[in-house]
Length: 321
Image (tube, rainbow, N blue to C red):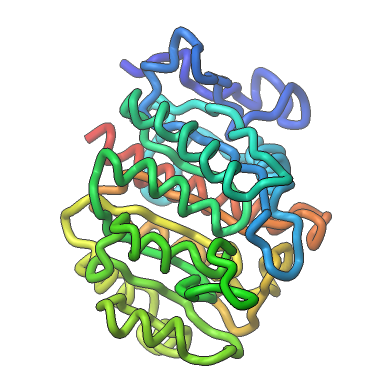
């Protein structure tokens, strides 16, 4: 029997527009709570965007994602997975960043996740810009060693630096992660890449280190199932991280992001790729770059949290197997 404490508030008991919003109406279980050690999957907000190089705003993402997440229900309509019964899930709250110091913020994020990892909780993160992934990976790698990664994005985020030597931006996290030994590059696949380019530096780094790049033209030509079968093969049976930038999705469906690129997947394909993650040993995941100022309607956030729910169902099904 699943633990009722970890069940979301039902829309039949409290209207979805009422109450204090938590991720998917789950209990708020911060560090120090007497049930913290019972959590299996923790949903965490990282409200910062200090790595943004153009349009800021993802620091407001977790709050809007929480509000949109009140529409998530108990059962997946296709797989039948009931994630909140398959695993003890909870909202662990937000990391408190330092908006004036990017390096201190990264240390704070890693320290927060160190406590999550010490409790053997699998984290599902809502960013924040994509630099969020780096301090999270630093914590996870202390436990799991170099991980594989399935990465959905318009951009590789493999650049060496910006503006003549700035090493930490949302365009550099996975270059740092490979250099620091957090990721095994031969078990990394990046899907959906497109848009105009500065040069080929990032793609050259990928080729030199064995990172598989699947450009959007190949994605559309092959289809979701074929591409994701290869992604699962690359990640293999080892520990795997999933990183999902909302700008993977075409801006027609997700305009609320800092660096949109046209020609991407539609909203249904955005969900499909998550369903095809089933079978992977996912030890952590994130949804990043939802920027409320560029979509005040909340449509981008609703898609973003729907994607989080898809990933959660995959994670919970494995935890409950």
